[in-house]
Image 1 (tube, rainbow, N blue to C red):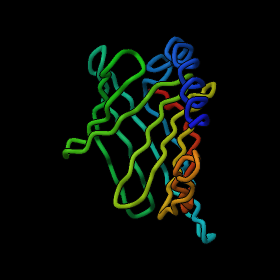
Image 2: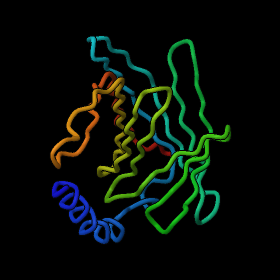
Image 3: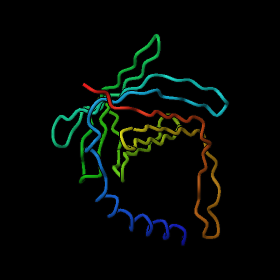
Image 4: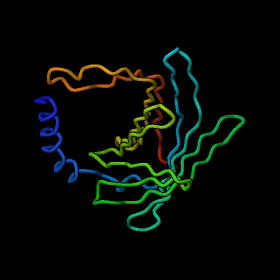
Length: 171
């Protein structure tokens, strides 16, 4: 229980700072491109071309398009990002009934969600003139703890790591 109180106090003390120092959308808007490197826990790897288009629609909404390309395929995901509760909270509408949360913290936009038994952590971080995209995907979990004031914890094995360093395209 003491552990949880410390975490809550730590998070609370940083919330005000993070909300005052998030950078989205300043510097984010435009078209970005780079290679997405995908690495699997079993040693497999692959790379695809990735683009991210962040196009303003209104003061509080953006067209958010992700494009994945290989030599033989093109996968275009056309979403809408909406600002929801204040300057740090956003919803990504996939236009198929799925809505994901994104939080603007510091120089990044972050999302966490579960799909088909896999937990995904999504990171978009503006680092100078680069937009770095990262994804971690975890599979099945194992519960531990939960006795004698020790919190119950589920530990998941990370099975896929993805990273792309995107450069802004000049129009």
